[in-house]
Length: 408
Image 1 (tube, rainbow, N blue to C red):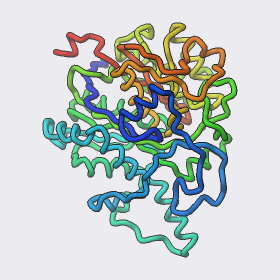
Image 2 (image 1 turned 90 degrees about the vertical axis):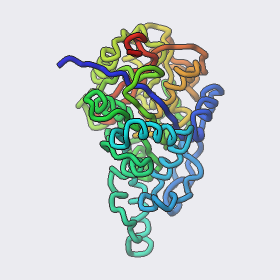
Image 3 (image 1 turned 180 degrees about the vertical axis):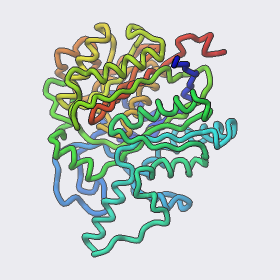
Image 4 (image 1 turned 45 degrees about the horizontal axis):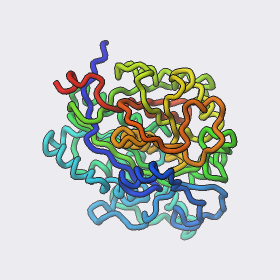
């Protein structure tokens, strides 16, 4: 079947992370190379202090202790509080309302990515059980304790009635949300979609990565010869996509699965390269037309090695690339959408992020990796999201490749 892309405009976007709420905080952090990481404290998440200290840094969003407003109390948990904070930034909710008024609320989809959803609330319930001998009273919406909690809350909070889908493919989840939304629009099922991802700090993730010996005791250093692993972060990132010409566009998406190992990537990067090839082909672009690469760049030895090999194989020396995880930490299921926001900011404002905390660049990346911010106007950029089990997604974002056709 012939692939027939439809113009997909990014009508609005926003992010909330350890750097702050809204695009301006993230743009300022890019311009000044600011790190939002801090040492993990015993009260950084959960209803009781951590019983076991862990020597690491995290990208924590402050001020998430305030419960959700009364109409949405049945969705209250840290992850949905973070989502609510994110939705309120940059006039995003107003943009969604405009789209719903124009297209109809039943023609606007919600596609969210998350790897943890409300698992923190489930952990809290077991903490109460351990202390009191019984679970706390449950809210009147049992869906709070399911993976669909985030999507259910976002759809209800925005008053939308279109298709609702939750993607959970670990760290590629919210990048894949863009691809799923594009398919819904291309098939004519919807005219617009709210896409994004939200993941918050919780014990399962922090101690789970620690058990895998992937957590760094220092601020993470992507593509540094001395890198020691990741710092876990939390974030909410959203975009409003519409089937419309003009503006910044989602030009192409590529997805693949390595099926190589439970956690390690294919050492040859075949799956990641297949996703890149697919995304570029759908965008109608050669690699030489890409002006910036937002790397997955987790600072683990294996991920960075595989991604470095992919970059040196496919892009000409000098093509600028960077990882922003030294600023925000690895935000897991939100990482793909957060990476898309950083990429969109670069395209819109002409400031390419640097790779914060990295000083000794591994040899294979010295022709590409940017340590500090770079002022440059680029038309097209790619954003990588590579996950456990080899679930890969690459997004191509930028200005229309054929302005005349895009405006038709």
